[in-house]
Image (cartoon, rainbow, N blue to C red; front, side, top):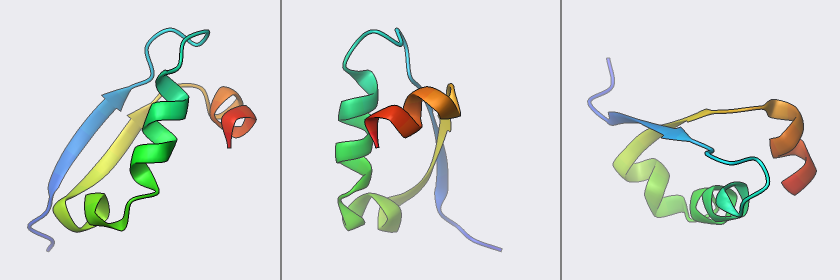
Amino acid sequence: MSNTIKVGISHGDINGISYEIILKTLMDSRIMEMCTPIIYGSPKVAAYYR
């Protein structure tokens, strides 16, 4: 069993910049070492920003 912390992140307003910030943050490998991020939001909107 993993001891990493699970962190929930809500995307907020789909017309805002939150997805850009979330995806740029997750590109940093240090984030995955510290926690397991769980993003709550629309997969279609996330795919647009990806």
